[in-house]
Length: 313
Image 1 (cartoon, rainbow, N blue to C red):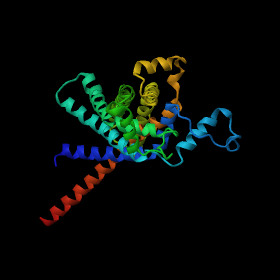
Image 2 (image 1 turned 45 degrees about the horizontal axis):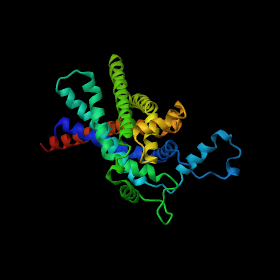
Image 3 (image 1 turned 30 degrees about the vertical axis):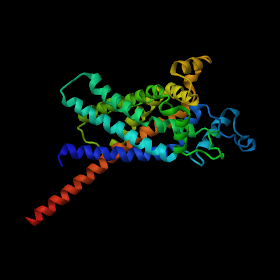
Image 4 (image 1 turned 135 degrees about the horizontal axis):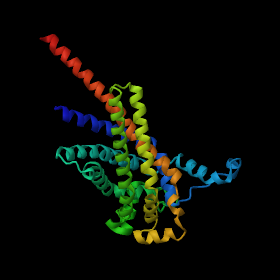
């Protein structure tokens, strides 16, 4: 295996491992964000259990209590969908970026924007039916005829029966508006800060301890996650509003939201800062962590093989 192929393999498995862990541990946060953006009403907690809390946080406490306790509708589909999606976006963007660089172009749009834009657009369209079904599953009133919560497969079938194939991709325009800028911003911020850190490290001699490297990775990851979450919150609200009413187009949704003023843009922002920033930052941080680990392990394996071959000779 060539050094380039070996590096790509390590990067892929690092991204896949990081994405799967981030998706699993952040599912309750995603669920809380989906419910908040959609305007679904979680079951209220008994007043006696939250009477000691300020009234302004009663809804948030009820929301997170509902989001973090079972059952968890759509969890396998959400975790699986997020795992392949984030792995494809982060690994794919880096891979395409290297391919673009090899053409010799120095156009900043082609080098920095096009890879993340193209890969995240493809992933969003491909993943849309799963996103559509799993967000719909978070509606406490969305049940089967027997009154049981729907599985993801049942939700997909229900959407298809009611609205056909188009219903499975309803809200794609808002989904692209939300997801693509989020990942473009996150990846551009990640790469920009990473380049700044590399330049600073070279000035200092280029030798970092593992602790210093982890701290820089954490700083880069957190900045990327926060920027992506804040700038795309309004698109989250638009997309989830479209999911609630299949008859609404993007312009109609915007008109309805704007009737109450611009404050709709902030709906669920606090949840989004956690539900979006946390998994994106976690994915970036763990990817760096796993790359270092797998790289060290591969070098150690290579040394052992070399020693064995040398001894035999």
